[in-house]
Amino acid sequence: MIISSSESDLSSIRQLNEIGIALSSERNLDTLLESLLYSARELTSADAGTLYIVDSAQKQLSFAIVQNDTLGLYLGGNGEPVGAHFPTIDLFQPDGSPNHHLVVAYTALNDKTVNIEDAYCAQGFDFSGTCKFDQSTGYRSRAFLTVPMHSHEGEVVAVLQLLNKRVEHGLTGTFSRADQHIAESLASQASVAITNQRLIDEMRTLFDSFVRVIATAIDAKSAHTGAHCRRVPDATLLLAEAAHRSIHPDIASFTLTDADRYEIKTAAWLHDCGKIVIPHHIMEKSTKLEGLFDRLHLIEARFAAKKREIENEQLRRELSACRNNKVVTQIERDTFQAELDSLANHLALVQRVNADGAIVQDEDIKKLELIAQQDWEDASGCRMPLLTADELENLCIRRGTLNHNERKIIEGHVQATLDMLSELPFPKQLQRVPEYAGGHHERMDGSGYPKGLTRDELSLPARMLGIADVFEALTAPDRPYKMPMTLSEALTVMGHMVENQHLDGALFAVFIEEKVYLEYAHKHLQSFQIDSVDVDTLPGLKTASST
Image (tube, rainbow, N blue to C red; front, top):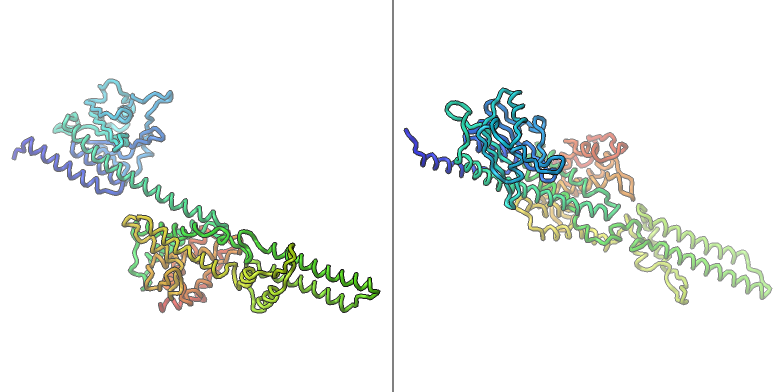
């Protein structure tokens, strides 16, 4: 059967279109480049070919893909890297002049196709490197078709070079004008695909960098969080991978794709982005009396003024007694000293309970209320309480440094996170980022915040973030206000949180069984924190098995 030239042309066009569609749908850049070179060789009957990538910053061409059927040479793409076999090519010479001696450099610099019938007879280009390659391999390089590939902005991004056209009697053919048009057409289609892939990669890199900038800014804002926003993603992804491997009945159906990993990682990086709106003095409140400054100094000044009042009153009594030829009795002196001792004890109580880590008991609160009923005289002669109502409220905080309103403000960072992330037009593959990030302070029994969701209402990644967030906070080695817990201490606390329906039991079991805690510890914790963990005695695991 004889095929007419028009039928052959139609077949080539159809094949070219099919290749173009395939290239445009490919998301892996290595596979895309590999397919491009193979397709170009197939359409032009080229025995060999090379694809070069332009590095504009370094002003170089690097070998990306090398294929040669005769030599059985297939490098780059998804195979063996090219770099170890072929050096980069400089686009400019040491004196700064353009490197027009090498055909691929000439093509890249001038955006021109070069079609050479026989490299050994060509004038104007240096093929000495080609000759050395031929001598070492026994190959005979002859016809070269070198085609530039440029972006939508006209910038040359790659160079396609085809070598030795196969004909009936061997590799002695030359590339025709039709071959050149086909190669240029294919290069143009592939350039669009490569440019799109680069743009996608660049946009993802930009987005990832932006996410990390936000997290770094939050960590830098508060010494109390340290590298929290950078470590939580590690813990979350380690747990996600463990859940992916686990056969635990509650999570056996959980699987991870690369897209899932990216979505979970992004949510973990952004889980505390709402802290950026929390006032600094609340985020950094290291004592109960701290606001824009630590008000303990004001109270100490009042106590000093009160002490002078007591001393002045005693002096007046002694002077009056002296004028009236009387003597101050020992009882009066003892009473005076008792007042001073009581005042000193009261100040010591205020100083003690003000510190972070102090646990305030009922007896302490009663004494503080009595202190607040005492007064002192200010510079204008007005009588003022030793402790204001706000100071008394803060000093009576039983644990930590935050009062009720401040704690609500801190807790509001999760709602702020949700509000901020809800404003972002996340693409389809990142649609669940707000949900994952906004659920890390929810509890399994619905007593968490901001929405009071229960375990069944929370996705697995959101519950993973909750465990990672708690574990990082308990073991963080760089919190200025507390010593970091050892692994056994932290896991015991978390086990009790499972029993109290705060953390997910099934995921906690995976966290322990797959030794996620240990893998994280070797990366982030200090050596003294990595102690022996008796899994058999850990609380929460029985709860997990019955969840």
